Amino acid sequence: MSETHINNQLLHLVIGGELVCVDPKNCEFKDLKAVDFVGAFGSYEDARKAWKNAAQQTVDNAHMRYFIIHAHKLLDPAAETK
Image 1 (cartoon, rainbow, N blue to C red):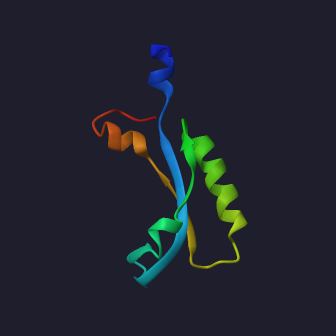
Image 2 (cartoon, one colour):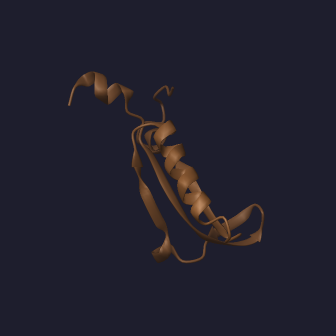
Image 3 (tube, rainbow, N blue to C red):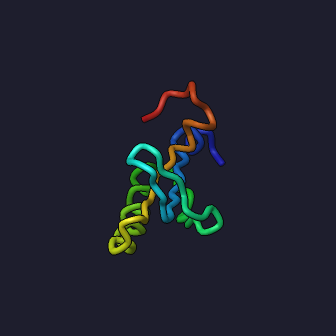
């Protein structure tokens, strides 16, 4: 893997699942064993496409939510992002 490729890759994870909310600011996954790991993506654009596709497939379930996790920020919080 080249240095250029490493510098351009920004790891994003897409996950989703059914939420249980006490109020809008206090939500958690109903069942962690049922969390849907959609995938890991090297750019926000690719992650957003996967997120949108997964979210559209579950549009009839008001408790189902999908999220994009900016994992590159967790790996190196001090790094500048694009």
